[in-house]
Amino acid sequence: MTLPIVAPGSQLQTFRVGDKSVRLTFRREAATGGLLIGKAPAAAVEIVALVHNLCAAAHRGAARAALRLDPVPLDTRANAAELAAAHLMHLLVFTRATLGLAAVAPPVRLGDLARLLTPTTDAARAEARRLRLWLAGEPGGFDPDNADTALPAADTPVRALLAAVAAIETMTDGPVQPSSPRDWFCRVAGLDAIASARAVGLGAVGLRLYGRMIEAVRALDALADDRDLEAFAPRAPAPGLGEAPAARGLLRHRAEIADGVVAAYAVDTPTAAMFAGELAAFLARLGGDDDRLIRLAIQTFDPCVPHRVDIEASEGACRHA
Image (tube, rainbow, N blue to C red; front, top):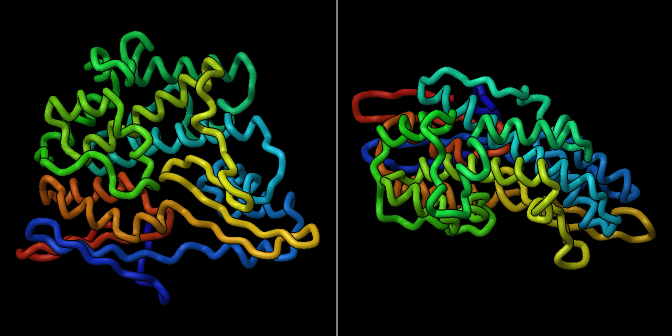
């Protein structure tokens, strides 16, 4: 998302990467809670999904859990499909554009992906299998849980992307595991696939991009075979607290109900956790200061708010939005 001018009320974070200064200007997230006070729980769920429409399925599931409504099984499939679509949009469109690579068209239009894969029908399962085959090959040829088959085949669309990232990123000795448990990469950081990619020299940004492919493949496998879907299910770990795994990380909703209506509500997004220090720590150990690499690093966190990135070097200023 692009912020053409610095709007009143915007916030600014500044980072140092090599000899470059990086300025990240962003707008605050929408305060949803006030819109829900006095609403019936069922109505509140639908309002939340409309306001947070980039991750509507994740927000709907977290809201339903926080408001103590019965879970809807289809919410889990919707969340898995939404997560896969978000990861693929980054890999096939945004990341390739940043690297100067042509966009790649998958067999299923990305804008329709969540809608097509959510139903519990044979047609939806077949679409998930077809997309998985195109993205990563046969399940036996690429298995992120098996060290022997944990790298994508040379003819798959992500392999060229990872090679382009490796050309501008130096591998560092920093930790692979993010310091924040809210970050989406925590869900894949311990897999054999990540260890195998690190062993062949993939740096931190490349690993996060590869992690997007891995989680997309796991979601597609779950949607194709109706197995392991619980990994994408919303949950209620405590009364009034709802959580859902979203494309940017762990989403949390908190709610209080009195006399049958919402008395208090708060949304705690992964983006807020990212701005609290995780992004700064990641950029501090970045393996290079190429402008494209810096932009990719920020994109792998994917701030869910309008934002602008300005990169200044000693020879002048380059602006990227």
